[in-house]
Length: 329
Ligand SMILES: Nc1nc2c(ncn2[C@@H]2O[C@H](COP(=O)(O)OP(=O)(O)OP(=O)(O)O)[C@@H](O)[C@H]2O)c(=O)[nH]1
Image (cartoon, rainbow, N blue to C red; front, side):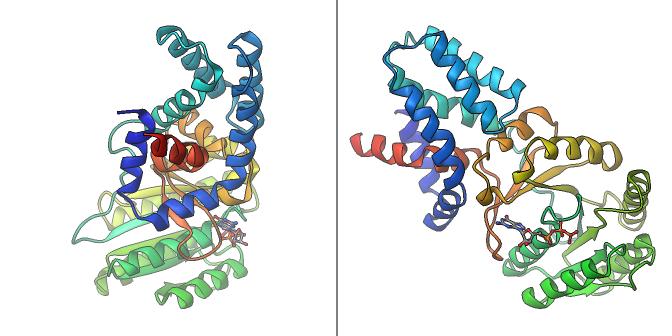
């Protein structure tokens, strides 16, 4: 069975809606990245110049230098082993390599939800990356699954952040535990955990500050919040999720390194993938950080957050060609 056919089959197991969301959310990256690659794949021979052009395209799409080198090296190797001569054959090969690269170890993107017990997620990230929106979207997601959800307004640095979380709480129909602006976020977390236990909640989603007087203070605050949660519920937080804005490109990589030192991240939420033509950042993050991307944000609406799935992702980038290949059999 061809790679495309297998890919199409696995993708068709999921709903059409999800496929559509990935395709429309990633359309900017798809047309710029795959669009540029198409010009290379129509060249008349596979030579050094072709590989160099592919490298430029990948780096230009924020794939990152190391990851780009790895992709192009894999491509060279497969071309040699499979004795490929026609540049047109590089396109399916490229998508195959990208799926493998994005897939990682089995179960890596599984979200650590405790069945029948309280699950706590801590969200970290600088201001404006989409932290509050992501918390709102996930609250909606888990509420739809019939779970009892509570939110903790841990960004006490900005009064606006507390209000924004309350707006999401109202929109989704879940309660928010909050204190006054300027109060100790660790105290908010303590109260939120007690409230979640007393109310028999399934999921507690904790917002945190993205900015303080300085970076050291912020990291110390996050460590403290982490400690307080862990003291109240063993093994919590069950996920420490860094929210990154895909449109900030390589800046996102630097933020990831900084937060990883302070909070021992378990996953990344990559937002605003719909707003960038450089969605290649997902590949760089997956490869260069030792933390898996668990969700991607594909828009501003409540249901525009999708669990990260390598096949769906690549399918959305190379979509039309996969349909065509399957149609040809
Ligand atoms: N297009 C798009 N916009 C998004 C996505 N996620 C969040 N946003 C938008 O990004 C902006 C910032 O999101 P917030 O949730 O306020 O960001 P935050 O990290 O909580 O920022 P602060 O409240 O400043 O700490 C808002 O206008 C959101 O609607 C996404 O996946 N796609």
